[in-house]
Image (cartoon, rainbow, N blue to C red; front, side, top):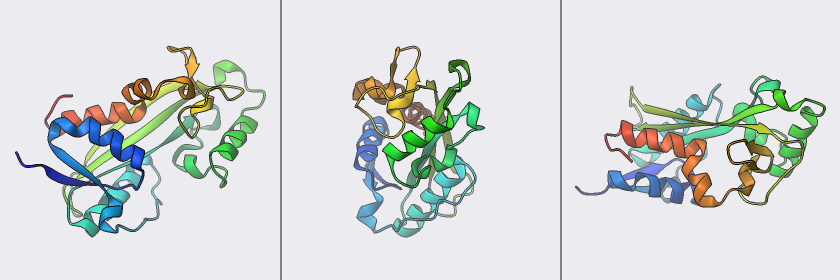
Amino acid sequence: MDKQTVVLASGNAGKLKELNRTLTPLGLELKSQAEFDVPEVAEDGLSFVENAIIKARAACRHSELPAIADDSGLEVDHLKGAPGIHSARYSGAGDIANNAKLLRALEGVPEPQRGARYQCALVYMRHAEDPTPIVCQGSWEGRILEAEQGVNGFGYDPLFYLPDYQCSAAELSTDIKNGISHRAIASVLLLKALGTSA
């Protein structure tokens, strides 16, 4: 079948590459929203799913093509799910400041109460008015360390400890991370939902 062009509602080159690789079996050609001059939209939903739908709908509307969007972040049990949908702008000053703020918020909290998970909501919309978008969600369980470990990855990865691997997400190789992360889990579910197994 001819390749169907789908817009990724993101300008993130790493995310584009990762999702293109995952979705290859579908014969989709994923292109960045930057190629279609899709403007940034206010992510004012109250959940990861709502924000992903907002982004996908805007990409569909401006490109007149199907779109995929994701919204992801970190939920910390002791903080009642914070930073959650505000993960990227938790401190208002980037990754280093976000991590420092998270460590301050968990200062003195014992290890058993430092449970956390990365969440990813991945949405596929056929068109801007699609009443039944496909929504897939992936969770990646771990806990928050008391100090950063590792130099790979980004965001909260140096603080996100994976008991099964006995290291932080920032100590994993890119290939391993891309196979087990919250986004990887959501991507496999999207493949299945679109009618092709990984």
